[in-house]
Structure formats: C-alpha cells, structure tokens
Image 1 (tube, one colour):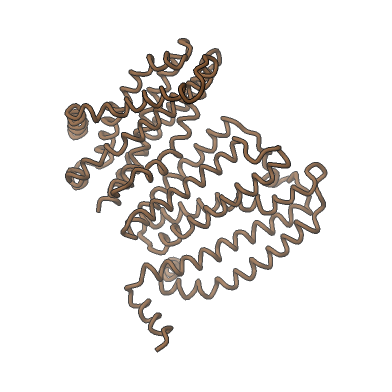
Image 2 (cartoon, each protein chain N blue to C red; image 1 turned 90 degrees about the vertical axis):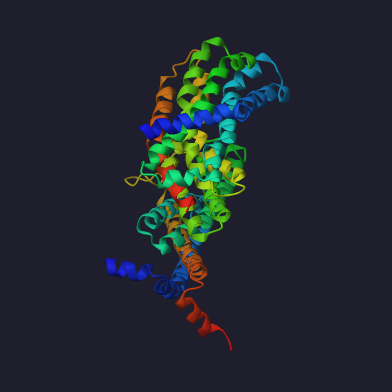
Length: 248
Length: 220
C-alpha cells in the first residue's frame, strides 16, 4: 500500500498514469452528465410548488456540494504536503483552488438565478449564501497568496497553510452566519432515511453529483499534470520527455 | 517565560518610541466612525440602529491597518530571523508579539470606546456590553491577524492581500460582537459573549502555532 502510494506520488509516474486515466474519467463524466441532464430536464416531473424553475437544482446542488468538497480536498492535500513533504500533494492542493472557486461561483450564480423567481430577489443575506460567498473569498485568498509569492515551493506551502487555517474556520463561519440569519430551505437529500425528494428527481440529482465529482477529478488530473511538468522543468524526466516529443 | 516578557516589553518600548505611528490606528478608527453619520443621515434612530456594526467594522479595519507592524519592522531589520533561530519556542514568541500588538492597538480602542459610543448615540445601557465585546473580541482580531501577517511578511506589497486573507476570518467576531451590542438594550446577550470568549480562547491557543509555522515558511 505504502509502496504504491510512494510510486504514485513520484511525478513521472503520476504524469504517465494521470494521462492514461484522465480521458476515461472524462468520457464517463460526460456520459453521466448527459444522463443526469436528460433525467433532470426532460424526465423528471415539474415540482408541484416551484414549477419548472426548480430544475436548476440539478446544477446548483452538485456545484454547492463540490464547492465544499474541493475545499476539504485542498486542505487535506495541503496538510499531507506540509507534513510529509510530498510535492504531488502540494500540486493537487494548488491546482484544486481555481476549480473549487469555479464551483463556488457556479453555485452562487445558479442559486441567485433560482432565487429571483422563488424569493423574488437575486440576493438575500441568507446564511448559506453568505457562507458560500465567504468560501469564495477563502479560495481567492489561497489563489492570491500562491500568485503573490515568487518562489513556487514557498508559495505552495504558504497557500497550503492558509487553506488549513480556512478549513478550521469554515465551520465557525458557517455556524456564525447560520445563527445570524437564515432563509434557505433545509437540506432535502442528506436525510438518508427518508429523503423529502421524489426518486425521479433524486436519481438525476445523484447522477449529476457523481458526474460533477468526476469532472473535478478529470480537470484536476489534467491541471496537476501541467503542474508537475512546470515544477519539474529542470528535472531529468521532463527533459527526456520533451526531447522525445519535440520534432527535430 | 523570560523571553516572553522581554519581547512584550521590547515591542511596547518600540511602540512608545514611535508614538505617532502607534496612534494612527486609533485616529483612523475615530475618523471612519465619524464619517459614517456624514455619509448617511445623522438622525438618532438611524445611528442607534447602525452604531454597533459601524463600531465593529471600524475596529476591524483599524486592526487590519496596524497588523503589518507586528512582524514587518522585525523582518526588515533582521531580528525576526534571530527569533526564528533562537532556542525559545517560536509559538511563545509569536504569542508575545500578539499580546504586545493588542496592548498597542486593541486596548486604546477599548479605552476610546465610551466617548465614540456617545458620538454614535449608542444608549448608555449598551455601553457595558460594548466594552465587554471589545475586550473579548479585539484579542481574537490580533491573534487571527498574526497568521495573515506571518504569511505575507516576505512580500513587498502584501497589504491588499492581507485584507483578502484576514477579513473573511474576522466575520464570526464581527457577527457575534455586533449582534451582542444591538441586542444589549433589553435582550440577553450572554450567548454571544460566551461565543466571543470561546473564539478568543481558541484563537489564542491555535493562532500562535499557525503563525509560527507560517513564519517558518515565509522567512526561509
């Protein structure tokens, strides 16, 4: 197990493996997303109360889940990078940040589009909206810190430390805004025993969630490949790789 | 412990020698708070409604403005590196710096609070709660801010970045403190005060460790 992990964490090995896996994941993701969108936009019946406009949840909810999931992955990878000094974990943490920020942004935009017909306004200072907005700021902080420091290794470690500080703060921030003000509807899916959502809506939603996750992994693998190439530009394996691909 | 006291004393002495610089955050705070009635309208009910928020946002910004001083001059003259290689535990040194920073910027805010509260028309019955939130909340601001400064101390223009890093982390303090002050006129506020105290304890326990790790990363 450990030997496998060590092998996987070595940049050249990761570069090759990721290059082999990523296209497969990408196609599976595309298939699931097509199925999920078809199920969500065509098959699922309109909501008895919210009509057709509830259908935005098939994009909104998965991206909101991903916005938090990616942050946790980023903080976890940063911790691994700081504790065991694994370069690959650092690359994964840093390359996750823009993807996570995009998911957060998507969740905010789709949420406000849904909010206009439902709540009558694009934006309310509701707890979940606010904590999602703050999450976006935290992503920007990680990215900004990484961009501001010249030395890539130092930048990666500093941004990673900030990601960890952020993950300690997220629950505090979340609950503080929760107690402050809330309007958002309660969770409908996480109650595993009896979800208050009909199965014809639940299935496409879960399909979309899985495909979003695969999308993240695919994009992350591609970004991380570029990341290890960039960081190892003076390493032997990158040079030999370039020498092989470069035309004479 | 000797190192702790020595560093607190040294930082206070340095602040005393640069009195004008040390007074800037307080002046900034007063000016920001004084601008608000000019920008809105100075009617008593409006002011009373927004006073807690204005007060605390002013305190947040004043702290933010003064944060850089915590490590910047030590970084410039090289004494920060000596602290890093000294045999004393670095989190302890950072804790001393945080305490000194609070004594120089947080404490004056607490002392200046009563007259400014009158300026904003805050009812005198809320004054005690306001002071309690300041005493409990401003140390958290200094402690959490230390992490941000430690991360950006090696950068030449870290100011804007520092606000991006630190302000989101200040939100819980802002929420609990401002809501305690707004509720002070009649409603129970012990819940918010307990939470502020918990945040202070938490930040004083963890922030020195995080800031020490950050210093080791950014000064290398």
